[in-house]
Image: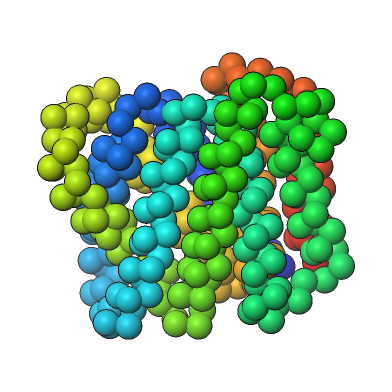
Length: 290
C-alpha cells in the first residue's frame, strides 16, 4: 500500500469514528429527520468547495455520471438510516465494530471473486485478523460471551455491514472504472440524500425538524463536516490502492470507536474490547505491509 494512501485512511478513520459518536449521541432523535438535516447541512457547507472544483477543473457531471452516482446515493441512504436506527438500540462500541467488520470482509470477498483483485498472503491474514477482532468486540469468538447489550447491537450491525460492503465496492468502481471525481461523487451523494428524503420529511415529520435542529445543531454540523471529509479521503485512497486493501485497512476506526464508547459513553467492558482492538491493529499492520 502507498504510504500516502495509508495516511489518508488513518485520518479518515479518526473522522469517521468521531461522526459516529456524534450520531450515537443524537440517537434518541427521529433518525430520518436527523439523517436528512445532516445531508442538507453538508450540501450547504460544502457547496463553495464543489463550486470551486467545477470552476477550476471545468468538469460537469454527464448523465452516465449521474446514473452511477444515483446508485451510490441509494446504497448510502439505506446505510445512514439503518445505522441511525441501530444506534437507537445498541451501543456504539458494538454496532460500529460489527458493521465495520462485516462490511470490509464482504467487500474484499467481492473484490477478489468478481473484480479480479488478488491480495497477498499478508493481506489475507490481515483481513482475517480484522474480522476476528471486530467480532470479539461484539462479544463473540472468545470475547467471553455476548451480553444483552451486545446482542441488541449485533443484528443492526450485520445489516448495516451489508450496505457498507455494497457501497464500498460500488464506489470504488465509480471513481476508478467510471472515472468520476471523488469530490463530485461525495458532494452529489449528499445532495441526492437530501433531495430523496425531503418529500418524506416535509410530508410526515415537518414538526420535528426544528426541535431536532435546536437540540442537536452542533452534532449535526459536526457530522456534516466529518462525514464528507472521512469519505472523501477514502475515495481518494481508492484511486491509490485496491479495494481489497483499502476497505479493511480503514477499519482502524474501530479502535477509536471502542475507546470513545468506553470513555465518553460509559458503555463498559473496555478491557475485553481493547484486547480485541489489539487483534485489529495486527490486521491493519499486515494489510499495510501487503
